Image (cartoon, rainbow, N blue to C red; front, side):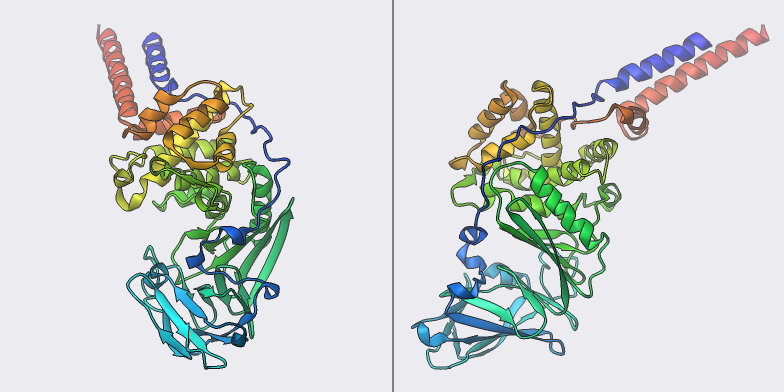
Length: 474
């Protein structure tokens, strides 16, 4: 009986040990010591709108938020210095519920490709009034703005010529977002980057404001991937805006329900990890916003995949989670698959394009692990992102493979082709041997391989028990 039990244990351990390879703990080679901060306004697309400093604009726009009608009115002044004045909104803003519900001194020249309003050249103080519609669909993917009796969240319209916006009353005007109503601003700095967290009075943050702003500042120091913007504005929002977050160049918003505990958020099915650090990572992806570098079409997956990966990795670095949580997270995500996902082909990212978030993050965890192993922990995925950020021109898939080879010191082309250009899922990078027994139990319960091992062990135990029973009868 003892011999048979020992054989069963050895079989189980032998079958399950292979995927559980702990990784080296290492830090990225210091890359950006001499890099200075960039002015983010130069990278903001014109159509996204921007509020420029008062010293850079003759035209001013004064904002008043009416809590009773839940509308934002912008009244423009000093137009005598310009011959023409335009205010534009994009179809994206329109699709997300933003409407111009009243205007004075403007002609509406909107079309299918945008919403444009031209000053009539005569009205001394022309104005536009914005509102948000369809707010009941708060779980909708595009529900990113809000107007409530207590606060409002709006995009900054595009102005030509450049305009300075300011509130007549309580509110905060960023470069691309407007938060109307009472709010508090929390600040932190890291090197040449200043970080502001803007929190409306009605928000109920799951994490403390000081923890959030300090976490973002820590990420600024830890995420050594090249130039960064001189300032970042992070907005906390609440219902009726959807869960999650969104980033625009150097500004982003996150729903106040977001936490650092990505383990608990995983079970909600969305697998958002730490949304604060996910959106912050987007502000460090110069290959998505800087005019000197961009991604080729086979690399579009990398934007959300890297933000999803670093939401977990940076949380782990900051000790809000440990290596075991990192390991469990990616083990779970790697087994929550969205059908056939081919990262290099956007049409095969699965429902709601979730493949780039899920499979993409798993691939990058495995790639980070391989780089660490190949370099004895001296280099990590950070070094790949640095080279992508500082690449001149378009980062094609061929460029990406070359960058990985330069960082790892060996070619990983065949492995990358399998993970990125086919539907194959890799085993994720697992970081801590202390998690081995916990993962072994998960594998036994939740995988076909584990169930087969349990069945084999059960048969061995039953056979051994039957043999003992026969021996006792004799």
